[in-house]
Length: 280
Image (cartoon, rainbow, N blue to C red; front, side, top):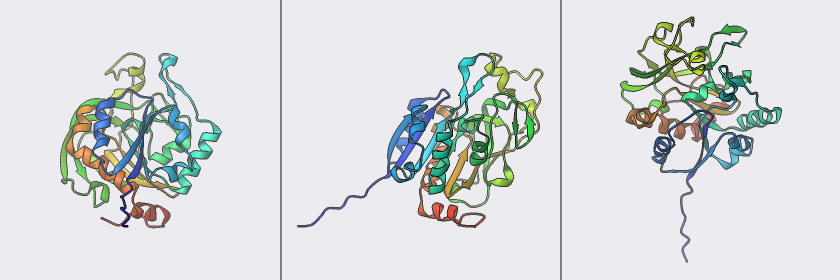
């Protein structure tokens, strides 16, 4: 009697909430990853899934969440730090080796946990804060920007994409640790305060305002790769709304990123001393 063998799908954990999002658009974005068995969970329950066991239960995590910011506290959001147990388990997960793709507003998560910004590669601030010993104002945002994205170098995350493509999406003016990441994508938009609005003003009910607000010029990087512990990591700034998530080039980026961080090659690179991963 012959034994029929079935290919076991890869396992993807997707995490959302902490910030409003289009559930249907996000589900459609992920559904095209047909080789993945997807488990979706929302914050704050998702925090129970993020520990060293996750590296055995899942092949990759896609984070579209923003924990640690409480918008119910009035005009100024309260910053809620993670518990010591969560920090311990999360860092243990990265040491074991978990491929993670952070998307859009995940850059603003856990602002009261300083190390989280280093794990992701930057931080979006909803209120003025200290970062790496430097004072930063609240960050800038700009909705519905039609801009041109250029791929940087050769990397599996940008494989199959044109050198340039156009997308309409939200952009951020915020600290990015360019020296600590591998650049993947740059925007042709001008990242200066005159082209953005104050996040703190928006939380206070004054949308699209920059009155009394200033911010240093920012980075044009809108996508990068890095590692932390033994984990390969990708951040993609795109994906604010349904239109952006439906953009075929952005969809390919997300799919490439998830496939790469879950690959043996990405994990081997994260465990190595190589400055950049091999192409392909």
